[in-house]
Every structure is written in C-alpha cells, then in structure tokens.
Length: 111
Length: 122
Image: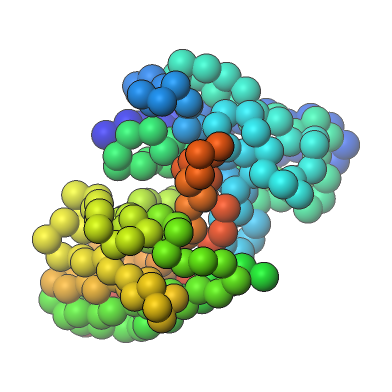
C-alpha cells in the first residue's frame, strides 16, 4: 500500500499569515494515463471532508484561490496564502492512483 | 442540487451484521463511480470500497474483503454496503462519496455525504 506521510501533524497559525502542509508518498503517483491523482481535503469540525484540490494543483470549483497545491513525484504541498478563521480544521492528502486509495494522517490547523 | 444521505448505522454486537444505505439525488447516479470511506472516532480517513456506475466492478480494502459487500440499485438511486462479521475496529463514521470520471477528468471525489455512525460493541 502507498503510505502518505504528512508534516506537520499540527500547525498553529496566525490569521492573515501563510501556512503550508507537506505530504510525501512512499511511491510515485503518476498513473498510466499520465495523471497524478493527488488530492487535498479539508475537514472542518463536525463536518464531512470536502475536496479542495485534485490532480496535485487543480482547485475544485468554489474553493478560494488562497489555497494552492503543488509538487511532483513523491513530494506534494498544500499552501494557504493568508489563513482565515474558516480555514480551521484538519487537512488530509489522499492518493487515488493506486488501490487501495490511501490518506495522510491529517494536519490540524489551529489559530 | 446534489445530495448524498447515508443511513443504517447503529450499535451492533461483534460478529453481527448491518446494511448501510446512501440515497442520492440531483445527478444521474448510474454515470458515477461511488465509494465508501470511513473514519474511526477521532481518527483519520480510510477507503473501504468502490463500485462502478453500472455495478459491474467492485473493489475492496483488505480490511473489508470477505466481510463487506458493496452494491447499488441504480433505478432507486441508492448505494449499499452490507457488512457482516463486524469487529470493534469497524467502529467508524461511514461516508458515501461520489467520484466524477469523464473524458476530461477522473478520480474527482467531489461530493461527500454527512456519514452514518456504526458502533460495534457488546
């Protein structure tokens, strides 16, 4: 199974300041079709997860542009340019290239 | 409006069975892969099972193989997860998730239900 390792696991942030979360996969995530199925999800307290970014860097419609994803190979990053209060929650990376699909442990973003 | 509403969770004894349902609306159900993903209390996310739109292909995590069966009734717009031989470690909130897969984009897990809690305990 592909192991997804996130760092940090907890991230105290200041409103208006940037934040960054890293995710390393134990295998490359490029599928036979040439795409890299690396996703980022946000889970606010008491809510189901919500997809923010798919295929490494594409924001889902409606996701604020302060969220950006990047990376390649086995190293990926989620960045928030200026943290807002509504961004508090847990962020997960998820790979959907190899079955079983696997998730990082989650990074708790707290003000 | 796309909606996914899970039901069927509850308290069950170890070794028991339970069937989860996910009623969907707002889209053409048969055109989409669907997934079950679970989250143990206070823990992270774990993919459990997937099923193709036509129901012809099913895939399971090792933890679910031989015990769980995913199915769908497309005319009823409902996804199911039949769970048997339940263990304490199956205790979790179970989410049903829609996947977009078109010629332009695939593996886009764009809608998640609110989840249904399964508790396995004596």
